[in-house]
Length: 212
Ligand SMILES: *Cc1c(COP(=O)(O)O)cnc(C)c1O
Image (cartoon, rainbow, N blue to C red; front, side, top):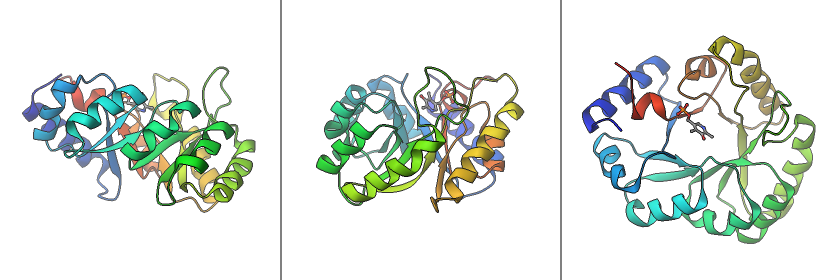
């Protein structure tokens, strides 16, 4: 990982490219060991995203005061109870079983986004667009969270322009349901995502190990 100075410059550069203060930057820290989190704090990072319950727990135990933690990884229902008290937001709800655990162990103010497999890729996590309404109904009935938006990881693409149609599709799915947050865009395609309405981008490598 880079130094605090380099990371803070990279963060500023990403902010400048986004050019919209309302867009939140979640720094994706799945590859950052606990001992390096102090450097991120020094660099001015305040909001981080973790992918695994175990890592989240360990990092929160050491650095719970320094950062707000979002959960951005695959959400297993048996981990929901462990994750809920540690996070500000969950980006990646995609199953009835996890929704049921949220009804039991959640809290009404917990912000949740539903992950959508917007291109219908085989073997990828996320809901089909046609499953969204049933899961939203289940969440509203359960009362253990507040659904606020949608999240997606579009198909791998070399050219960020190829992601545009998927980001636009996610925006339409959210707009049709009055969901205000769109978590979309990573290191390589965040600018296109913001052009298509992202309110939250999730960025790792571009900030943590910037090249030149
Ligand atoms: C790692 C990760 C990111 C960030 O990816 P980069 O290419 O490093 O910017 C974003 N979202 C999720 C769900 C991730 O796991």
